[in-house]
Image (cartoon, rainbow over all chains, first blue to last red; front, top):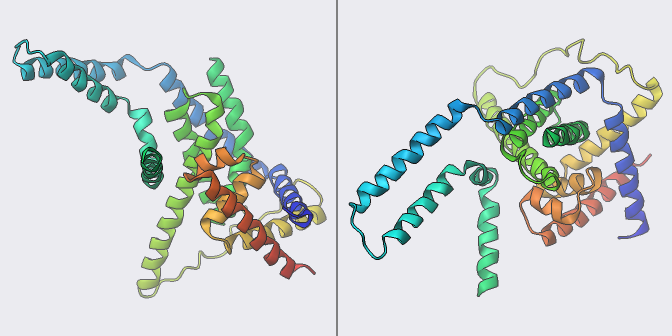
Length: 121
Length: 179
């Protein structure tokens, strides 16, 4: 990086900082309101209401019943392993937060998978 | 409660800068406010429980994707408007409230700052989207290479390449505009 480039970076950064500092009152107020909305959303996440847990509990109970019916009540040597596998899948499905990242940029995950494959090979 | 206060501090510290970045990308004041609001809400809803040091790259990643969505929608909308007979892309006369002067700073200072930012915005518009993102995240927002890579969803090597090319291209464009 040459001195001229560094000077260019500094000047453009300064112009940006000045534009941030001179933001008008109406825009600042709207951004503060947006922040309040976001914090209210976070509060809902920190203290989940009982109503949010009822469907989750019902789904968990249904999954346990489904697993029991699917295994037919028989004791097979691999039944524990199978049950664990199903529970793991169920856990993945209910862990919506992490999967939500996939919405953001599927291309990135394709790239990451390729990189990992290259590393293994 | 500590986490909530930390999130509030984070959002208060990032919102104005994020707005300017969105505005430079979209070249539209209202759309920039909308995408920043969307990004803040999404971060709070989905990632408030994540470690604090992850918030910045995650927030800018969400913001970047929202900006891309808006640009995509705008292209579709403009395509439809251009196709529909008797319509125009003109938005009508300017809103007198929106075009009213900003009360901060002297008129000369505001004009100088606005002109420079306008020039930066025009120059950024000539870059590829990846170069523009790399330049704004690294130079304006101060993210390091690793954080920028997370925000852009690419490798650190790509960030370095895009950033270097962006600075070169901008320097050239700015050089041409020097009085």
